Amino acid sequence: MKENGFIKYYNNTKINLAKYIDKFNDELLNENSIIIKDNLKQFANLNSDGKLIRGVLVNLGYKIIKEESDYSYPLALAFEVFQTSILIHDDIIDNDDLRRGKTTIHAYNYDKYYKLTKSSKSKELSNNLAICIGDLGFYKANYIISNNYKNDSNLGNILDYYNEVVINTIRGEILDVVLPFNEEFKLDNNSLEENILEIYKLKTAYYTIVGPLSLGMILAGCSKEKLKDIEKIGYTLGIAFQLQDDMLGIYGEEIGKPVGSDIEEFKQTLLYAYTKKNKKYYDELLKVYGKKVDKNSLSKVREIFKNSGAYSYTLDMINSLYEESEKALNDINWLKEEDKEIIIGFIEYLKNRRK
Image (spheres, rainbow, N blue to C red):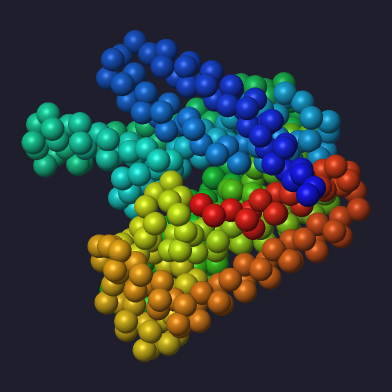
C-alpha cells in the first residue's frame, strides 16, 4: 500500500512546528505579575497539544511555491496562536467545558474562583478573563507576523490576507451565533441551508484550509492565478471538512469536545436544516434538540437524522465536494508532482478521519 504523502509531511512538519510553539509558550510566561502569569499559563496550556493542521498547511503553502524552508514557521506559529485565541472565545460563546481534551479556560477559572468565593460573580470573572486572554493571543499573532517579516516586501500582502481571514471567521461566527437563536425562538430564518453553508465557507473553509495554505503561498511570493487555483480547492475541502465535523459530532468518537454537544447548543447544521423540511421528523427532533444530552437522546437524534434522509443527504454532499476538489487539483498543471501527491494525501486524510 502506497504511503500517504501528506501524513509523512505532516508528521515531520508538526514536530518542527511544535518546537516553535513550545518556545513561544515559554516566552509568554516571562511575566512579572503573578496574576497575569497565572492566566497566561492557561493560554500556554491550551496552545499546546493541538493537531497543528493549520500551521502545517501554512508551511505546505510556502513549499508548493518555493523550496521548503524554516522561513515559513513563524507565520505557521502565528496562525496557530490565532487558532487558539478564536477557540477561547468560541468556547465562551458555546459554553463548552472541554477543548483539545482539556478544561476550557473560562470553565477552569469558574471552578477555581467559585471554590474560593462561592460567589455568583465567579462566572462573570471567568468569562471576562478568558476574553482578555483570547484578545491577547490575537495581538500576539499579529506581533509574530510583523516582527518576523518586517523586512519582507510581502508583509503588506500577508497582513492584508491574514486580516481578511480573521474578519471572515468572525463574520461566520456572527451567523453561527444568531441562527440557533432565530431558530429556537421562531424568528425570521429564511434560507437556513444557504446561511449554514455560508458559515461553513467563512468560519471553517476560510480559516481552516484556504487561509493557511494561501498565506504560505503569499509569503513565498506566488501569483494571483496560482492563489486562485488553490483557493478553489480549499473552499470545497473546507466545506466538506465542516460537514464531516457535523457528522462526527453526532455519530463519531470524541473530537476534542463531547459528542452530542451540537444538540445541546441547538447548533444549526445541514443535518438539522434538512430534517426541518419533513414535519414528522422535525417535530420528533424538537423534543430532544436543544436539551441536555444523554445516551437515549443521542441515539434518538441519530435515528431521526437517518430516517429523515438528512444523513444520506449530508454524506452525498461531502462525497461530491471531495470529488470536486480532486477534479480541481487534477486540472492544475503547475504543481510539482511531489506537492500534488501531498495534497491528494491531505484529501484522503480528511476523508478518513474519524474524530
